[in-house]
Length: 66
Image (cartoon, rainbow, N blue to C red; front, side):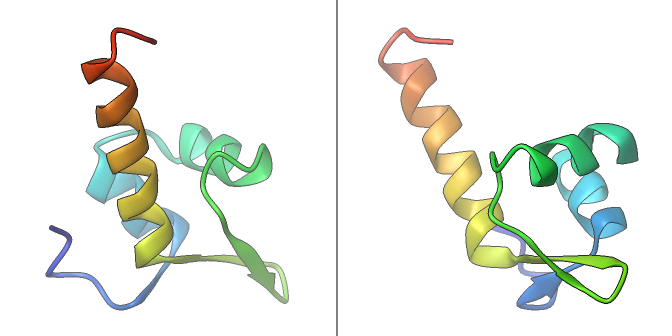
């Protein structure tokens, strides 16, 4: 999963990987749904954080929660 991406992703890469808009990608980072950090004015997202987010969403859906 996410093999084509570096270990640290940009907002644009996050949006592309999750097939979401940039605004929603920013929201996920700002509200802590995906662990991310700033370098200067740019968001950086560890690929492992994106994988954790995907797995947690999949697990919640398997357990019948939204």
